[in-house]
Length: 465
Length: 118
Image (cartoon, rainbow over all chains, first blue to last red; front, top):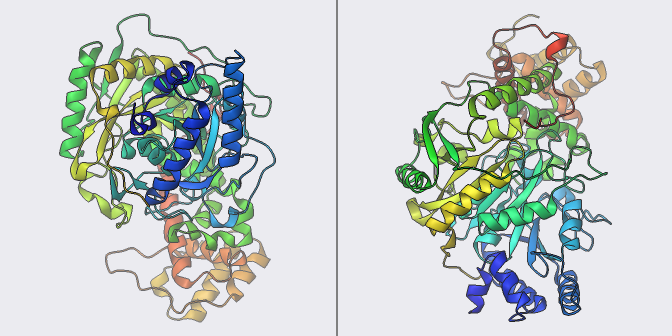
């Protein structure tokens, strides 16, 4: 295998190479570090490289493997984390100038669990400042600059896990960890053409992760295949005394031919390529799933609820920043004042938004409970152009049906995967939304889809920078 | 509360007076209102909204102006932008309970959010 083939291999392939001693973890780590240095800047994907820690962890993985101590499928595999996870040995900047020099003396639980599994931490990856909680309206919303998708540098890598998406897509890491409050794993996974898994709320501990919205925040894997995403999720999942929301739950598997519901009006207000690729994906899914058309999402005020909760909880989480007046140091103009808007959210609206979630969870269960997955295009368009404000980028395709807000409000899992390409050579994607704690069912469907199609194996032509 | 419109305010003095008065009416702390009212505008006049755009409401402007206690450099344009977003938030808030259903103890909100296993 060439270095390029190794860089873009999935975790299972890398593990086979390591097990056969065709490659050491240290060699693999050095390969990825070199690629991060060479390409990371071109896509504004990296905040901090961690070569010393990475090489020490890789040497330990090699040493343990040589001694016969096997730690599982991620042993010796290098990865990166969104820069909102606390790590020893590097700043944790939250993508924001006011926190640029912030350091923690402990590892986030996810980082600790990955370390216990023998994975090798390479880098802190770029993100939208404060995970986008203050209402940014353009790609240039991080002190590291606008994230660029490896498929076309003039377009945004998506947010807020921008660097995680770009680094996986460009073969700069074996896999990455992102976070989602409302779309921040699914969006960049689609814009970068990678597979992202947003777990059920409570599946993964958030200890050591920046809090934006404690009732919405989730951490999850971004990877080159659905199989990799599930492998990583199983490692990072589980209860944690430091995060009472995190629970131990089994990973139930589908015991029969999967039953999939197609979201009603899913392709209204989508770009032509998004529609065509989605329809082709449905044909591929129908080969191994029972597909039911026109499953309607219950009509409830998802957008209003998620907007209210993000603003209120975000303002509470960053109350110190807002009251200090240092929000002015944020990169995006809208972020400099967005915190004040959240600060003024009426408590009654916040309470009503939380109350709506009870109804939403019940309505989702009634509408979607008999399906293993609800399928829809993840986004209505390809990646957004960097040069334009979001609200002017694709005016024709605004206002379509989406499951991002509703899925996050109800806390259910979703898996985003690439399904082809559209305008300007940019990837398109579909999402599978599942029942609580049924991530393995989504992964099984996605694995069968990826076995039949090869969109997830496509590689971008990279530019050094 | 008396309905106030931005377009009624003919000069800056009147605007500041309005901010202070409305802030008090909104039961904000008096010191906060005074701070907001006393803070000089950083960057010139209020922006002229586009003809088709509805100007921010006076109550929203009043609340927005209190944010100068955190950042005295907030310009009039920034205050107007904050106020506009506060108005939009109010519309979202109204959408959350369009039928004005009264909250009963049995349908209280999620305060410790968990996802039930079904």
